[in-house]
Amino acid sequence: MYTILRKTVAPSLVFNMDTETITMAFKMDAERNASELTSDDVIHIAAPAVITAGKYTHLIWYGIGFLGNILSAYIWNVKTMYGVCSSAHYLVAISICDILCQTLHIFYYLTMYWRLTVFITPGLCEGWGVLYTIPLYISELLVLGFIIEKLISLQNPLGSGWFKRNRRAPKEIVWTIVSVTAFCVFQAYFRRVDIKTGCSNEAFSEEFVHPVWIWVPDIFIYFVVPVSVVILNFCILHMSKRRYNLSIPRHPLHKEAHVRVRGTLKRSTVVLLRLSFFRVITLFPMSVADFLKHFDPFKRSLLPSVYSMDDVWTSERWHDYLFYSIIYYIVEIISSSRYALSVFIYVTSSVHFRRELRKLYWRIKHSLTSLFDTKISCSRTTFVSVSDLTRNDNAVYVV
Image (tube, rainbow, N blue to C red):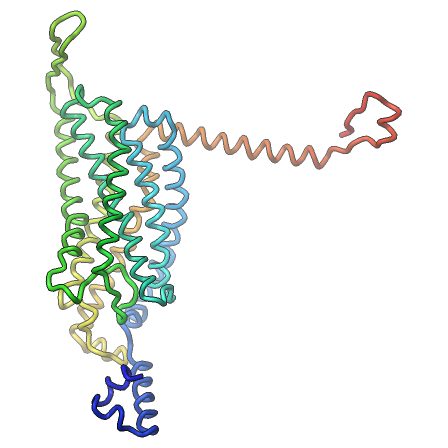
């Protein structure tokens, strides 16, 4: 009560007012809050087409993503896939991270597009932000991990065989998951929830002048990692096109054998390159859009109060913010596809993935057919009576 009153009257008069004055203060505050438009109100009124597109496009991403990522995680985890792709462990982990990202994104989607109050308690909102950050960080670091591993295998193809890489990958994935989880839990101490802007995945600090624990990880994950992935991809493409000599020591017939090899890209390498390029292309624009939020022209907290759309159109700050918000929503819709469309890259780039997908399809079809035939045969089968069984030792089924 005192918190509401001190916004409208002087603090020294709060305890000296009569009941009528207090009632009037409550009414004035309620009328002001009821008539003032929030930034979400303005966006939903000014750009209904963008909001509608986001509502239904995200539903498509969810449908494709959940089914596609579950299939991807299952197929890449098949034992034969580890023999044809040493980075299959990474792809399984990335598919699981994408499932978690889409699951946690549903709460953000309901708040952003349908304006449903999902988190009432601030503690739940902060916890959601930490949980949402963990799979985001892990997936981007895993992309960098399998690109570095592929570059090492091309640089020294005889010294980093399939067996070594296949044993090293699970350890690297576990180490990444544990490290990122521990760091994000520690980072939760610096997270605060802005009541005016609602629950969002925006981390800021009011106690610290230089919140390095917030800026440094975001800059590293969303800017340094994508740029590094692009540079390493071009290095892999360059190495695959050049000719080089391989020296094989301790050859059974000679002391040393020299083999001249023309580098070519394996199918598994093509999958990794396409996947990494796709994730960078869809991640980097969203990173730039999120980074612009911290500049004064686009800060939601600095917007002036408006009570009608006429006030919005006459305000230059609101005009800039509205233009930025429309671009942000469009970029967010497109960027969210990186959690859903990876399965199409696997299908179009990997012969082994398509083969395992066809096997899975025929197994499911055969199981459903067998189950359907069994139900039909059971429904059409009747048993002979007990009296017939006593008269005839050779009991049969009548169909």
